[in-house]
Length: 197
Image (cartoon, rainbow, N blue to C red; front, side, top):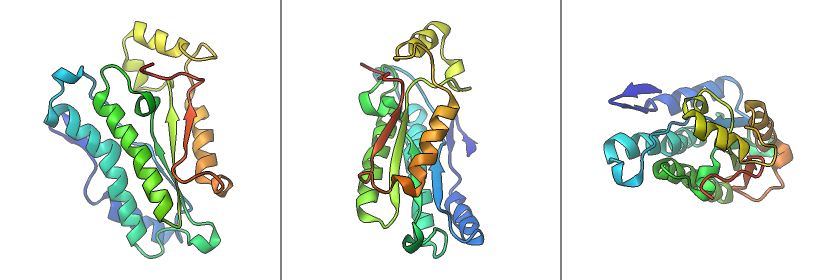
């Protein structure tokens, strides 16, 4: 990702570079899209260039662009005859139920769910979304203390999740063990937490 004007974007050559790497490694059996950014504001204060475009570009458009490059490059992915490839995008409970101040982020993550379902029903490969709730990461450590504390306690365990919790879900979804799931399935990793409810 490159730093843009008060935002981020995925380099236009990223898809081709990743596809080339897939060919060199005899085809990827799993692809996880984990990049994501936030530009939180209330909806009335969100501007297209500053708050919407960077979030949509990184969280949604980059996924579609990279996948398009992989799917159109011969031998970049493991053939369907030997299990194919499991594509997993990092969604969010904000994309499932919305979240105050995150209309743009929630829209980008909801878009991933529709994208995975559409791709999963038209491809020989598997497409899924993992939807974490409040996970203790560098990004969530920037959330104000009171909001962070409430977010961590609004789940059944009374604490925030760990990156390892999400990693286990991604490992399962990207494996052939998930082949029986409906195309575009969303696996929540949230301790029953639902932002925005």
